[in-house]
Length: 223
Image 1 (cartoon, rainbow, N blue to C red):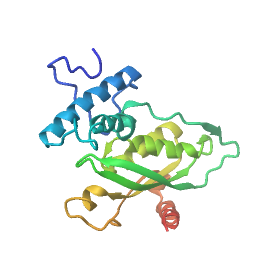
Image 2: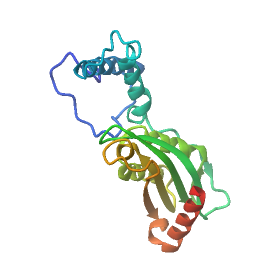
Image 3: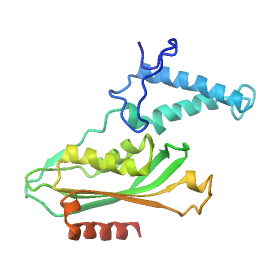
Image 4: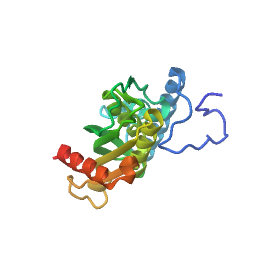
């Protein structure tokens, strides 16, 4: 049975929208998912009285949207996390490293509207451990953002993964983002209205001085 079995009346196994499905999809499974999703989007357009058969603007839109969802918006659910390049911490460096702003683009799980902003990551490496390539922080942020998300869970997912793969002495993850579900619909607040979330681990959680240092550096990077 394929991952998407539309020939069966059995319900699909429910999966949390911002979690990994469990194993990477093959290209065949991705193609099945794109085609099945496009068919359902066509049905939705029919319900909304959007002529995707004759209107030159929307004729290929269901397939384009299906491709976008599978290959971009939800990419992080169907692929394994990026490989992390590690380097020996030869000199036992144990001071704070802060990197950012890292571009962040995600999609709100509540209204399927864009979330965009940036992440800033602070790390205190273990003196006896390893450090990772700087670009890997960008890749990890992009990976977990490529799912239907809420910001409070996204910041924790990034932190949990970095702790698991790098085992630092301390870690901080900060996300500063605009939510279009608040700006483009509903209350329609100012487009500059932002949400900030921070998550701390290890020495950056237990030591108020280190937390303050990280926040000061993050604010300076955001200026």
